[in-house]
Length: 528
Image (cartoon, one colour):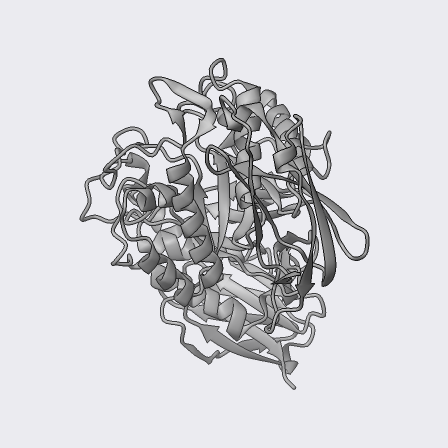
């Protein structure tokens, strides 16, 4: 009897003796798996060649399983019934990423381990790999640096307006049949998907997950032409992606579209039709995807709030991959001001989970400016934006021009990457991030601060520890009923250094001061 480890990928091959004009369209193959406890999982299979079909499934229960295939047409050569045994892995496994709203920071692994997301954006990663360029070295380095999530698009575009044509591209990265000029949306480019397979397996070995963006920006072809890319083709596309990749633990999130408000015609603005589309496609993905990965949307416009947008369909959208950039001008980009306010406003009363998934792309001044919005996106914006996000109680995903889109310079990190590594070390080693939540009561609100410099605070539910972020130095007064019982330290977000803080205590108000415009983190914890 075949044996596999729990939460590994079981891959079964089937071969048909029938001839189909178009096997991607003319026949659907499903496989029903039954667990030892009696639970059943209906898993879509995918065509991987003219006569070849595969199913991928990741069981999470030890014991003897059974499976049985079925088709929508009478094809006896694809009928299969068998059993296999699932055993416990030699080493503990975290399992899939799951949402847990209201607990930790909204995300945990199946093992119960809380997950602090620190990610990077490489929209064109699969296209880069398909063009034969090196993706392994940068993925290995990101894993070593402690990053655990990559934003990537399954459909890869050759450009981003206004001048962001991809300099790495050496051949078409069209994932369907035909070409953009003469598309065949009922067929798939198997060579392309076999490259994606290799990248997925590499990420799984490295312990990195993907936010798999099923449809790229809605201004791009074919997603901006709904009269051509009709709902039937859309469902065929999504079913194929789920069938091929849902079993991988390197799938962290299924995101329906990048900046989903571009639906239906590529015109960037909020409209209720986009919400209806997200609900419809979200329900479809949840119905066919057997492993329960979070289903997400990624926003463009920040208003109206997401609790309002999806009030009619609770539980369909699990996760908001939230985009807000803060200040990005010549004189204020260094502050990344306003990120925490946008998060508080847009996600007010939201019952699901969320991640600060996009707050800019750090500029490489050695490269030609192709996207004007990146002009002043400097390492200071990278650092402060990340800390503002984390002090809103969320993980953080950034991006760098070296590997974001039009360019592929995998051998050199930009300056801001070191600041993200320091942030990850702080929240996972210096403090236990999952014990902290945003706190508004402790900071003396009567104290005046320059715009963008208001301190932010996190606290434990027991109020035995507090963290205060000063975006640009200055003063902060804290209402501490047990000020004399706390020890205090300054953490330097630029270097990762920690030193004891000096403080002045007056009654129950404790005042801390840092001169200059550098950012600092104040750590307060009860003496033991």
